[in-house]
Image (cartoon, rainbow, N blue to C red; front, top):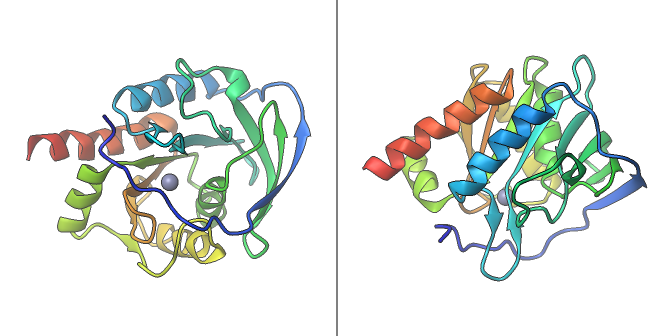
Length: 207
Ligand SMILES: [Zn+2]
C-alpha cells in the first residue's frame, strides 16, 4: 500500500489550455518512462485509495523553458507509455495556468516543475513523489523545505519552490511542507534526480 493517504483539499483555480496532439518526442523520454515505472513500483507515484493520482516526472526540452511531463490522471497507468505524456509549452505562475499539448493535459502539479526549470538553467529533470516515510525522514534531517503556509496548487507554492530550488546544489531533494507527503527532486538529468530520491527511499526503509 502507498504510505501516503493525504489528499489536498480545495484545489484552487488551476486552469490549462490544452491542444490535442500526438505524444511528445524527447531524447530522454524512454529514460523518463523507465524511471517513472520504477517509482510506480515503489509506490512513490500512483493512486490513493480514493482514486486521486499523485506524483509525476518531467524533463526539460533542452535550451527552452518548455518540458515534457506525465499527464493528468496517469497515476494508475502501468507501464507508462509515450502517449501518457504531454508538453508544457508555457505557464504563468501568477495566473496558475499552463498551456500544454499532447494526448493528455498537464496536471496542476506541473506548475512546481515549471518553477524549478525557470529558477535554474541547469535543471534538466524534475520528479515529484508522495511518501509519508520519506517525508518524515527528510523533515527529521532538516532537509530544505518550502514554507508550511504555501499550500498545494497555489501560486505561493510554485513561487516558494522556485525560490528554494535556486539556493540548492544542482542535484537536490526538497520537501513541500504545505503539501503533505510531497517531495520534489531535480537534477541536470532524469537518472540523477531518480538516484537522489532512491537514496532517501533506501534510508527511509532502513531506519
Ligand atoms: Zn503532489
